[in-house]
Image 1 (tube, rainbow, N blue to C red):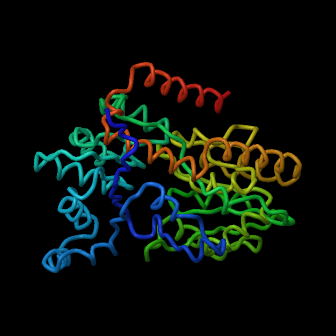
Image 2: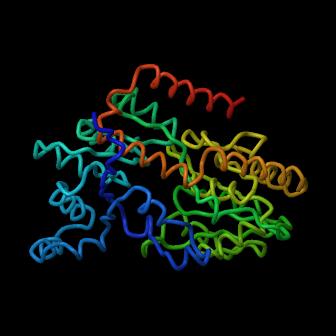
Length: 381
């Protein structure tokens, strides 16, 4: 019998422009993460908004009157026969493409990378259309449990893998540390951070700004109570500037609003890859990466006094912060590298095409569940 691995599959990835923006010259100059690794390794075409310009004229005219994500999904449906598998790199892309497949009674190997499935509207759609998603990729144990227990999705359909960071771009740098920082826009609780830092002799920069031309309410909240305290600055930074900010920060603070999703995960991984300890609000969704007392500290959500205590503790104990950062870097190198993530997605795509995902044994699923609960136990111990 012919070895299926000898024939390389061809994939189509549905994603938002900018999510994996490959800029080879900047990558070569060490000015941005290595986004192109995904496209090269997976052997995939990238169908973002810009790619719609390559569609036939009549479809381009049609897409002028259709929102961007539905336009991408429709285009993916038209060209699906050119590919062995479609990979959806967002919840909206995944749910719309699965809905279109189900509506047209069409089968196509479909891998969905999903980020926040517990939102009520998304959950309602996913429950109805997961029949047309062959493999759902998750990296949050809260979402795994929600998918299995609340949506009745078969565990054999779900792959639980660690999320990623480009460990070669985000790396430790031997520079003096004279401040701390906070980064990100989604579900951030910056008012609590501002209150915790008020009056402290610790400088902090909040790297947050607009995204795709939109200013999130979490960013607006930074300025709603008047001028910032003199020890706090705020503003969006590019990749090189952000890396420099991480480098000169003694540790990174991630204040979160209540959420069952893993908000803050990208920043947590970047900080740990840079060899930095992390202070994070304890939420339902953020429980799979930070190891309490080893790579960082959890604080009660929305508690400025507890956050202030954690900040002053790590600031006054730089050796402890440094040791936590070293442990975080070790964890990244063993579990969360960009190369490992890309290899996992490539294997999952190949397994989906060959049907191996559907043939996974009960013992595989059991091991998956044991790993999730063991991780949770180590975090809360």
